[in-house]
Every structure is written in structure tokens, then in C-alpha cells.
Image (cartoon, rainbow over all chains, first blue to last red):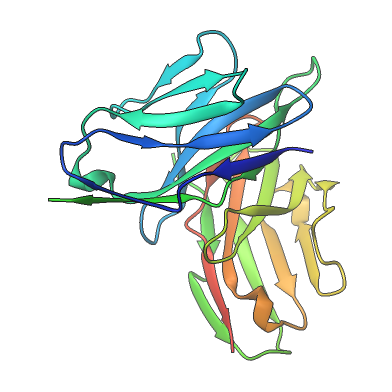
Length: 118
Length: 112
């Protein structure tokens, strides 16, 4: 079975400061890794994902995450945050399927609330 | 391209009443998921459909929850009778052949 631990339930930060949201996972099999963002009263949106290849993945709005297999981590970082980044961020894993491809169900962490202050 | 639609957006009921939620996935998406998101927790999968067949319902409380996906398109999730601990946001997601999941806005259920 897989599990996800998000180490911080809340992260307050000032605008233009760097931020790191921590995520550790546990799995006995290979997994895909995801970060989702949830703005108030909205559904989850995929921010970025790691499937294979380069361990550093980037999103279009400046976030990046690095897959570290030895530490079973997938921390999310941004060098300079904006007020508009205020949201809840969820780390998730999905067990890799067989050669037929596709994803299995997502296992989510409890979420980290990022609050960006002016 | 239209996203995943859900209704209602909000629902308040008393315990022991019944309630139903509706989801219309993105056109052409074969896989449909229902997640339960309790306040302060991450979403938890309740049931996964592939077309109109159930792939995974291992965490669905089958004594009170039921779900169906008619003709492999729309889906309804029902709770009967509701308990206080069922208060949560119910998220529907869809994907094409178990690819990236796209989420709807959710239905916030309050059981009093």
C-alpha cells in the first residue's frame, strides 16, 4: 500500500520570498508522483507530475519539484511566491500500472495550506 | 473543452436523510472517479468506474453509499441514510483511459 505525508499543514510566507512544501511517500512498488493545487471553492488542478526521466519537473507558473528516490521525497519549491499562490497544495502518488500504461487511483496527503502575505 | 460538471454545489441535510450527487465527466473520458474530502484531509477514493463497470470500490461504505454510471457517461453517488461523519466535499474526476485526472468543483455536503 502507498501513503503520503505532507510535513507541514500550514506554511505562511511573505510575498516574493522562497517557499518549500515538503512531501514524503511510502510505497513498496514504483509510483508516479503529483502535486495538485486547490484554490478556494474550486476543484483540484494538476500543478506538475513526475512519471519518469528527469527527476526535476517544472510547472508553467514557476513551481518545481524534485523526485528523490533514496529519501522517498517529492518536495515542491518556488523561488519567489505571489499573493495569487495562496491555496491548498496536495501531494499524491499513484501506483505504476503494468505495461498497459495508465494510472491507478491517487493517494493524497492531507494537504499544506500556503498563505502568502504582502 | 468543457470540464467536469457536478451538481449541486452545496447541500445541507439532516442525519438519516438521503442525498444524491451528480457528475458529468469530460466528453469521451472512459474513467470516472468519486473522491471524499473531509475537512483537513486529502481526498480519498470512494469508487472508480471504467466505462460503466466498477474497477475499485474497496473504500466505499456499501451499507449506505451507492454509485452508478449509466451508459458509461454520467454518474450519481447516493448516501442513504446520511450520518454526521459524511459531511465532506465530494469530488468527481474523469480521465481518458486512466490518464491524467481532471477534477470537478465538488459538492459540499453538510449533515446536521
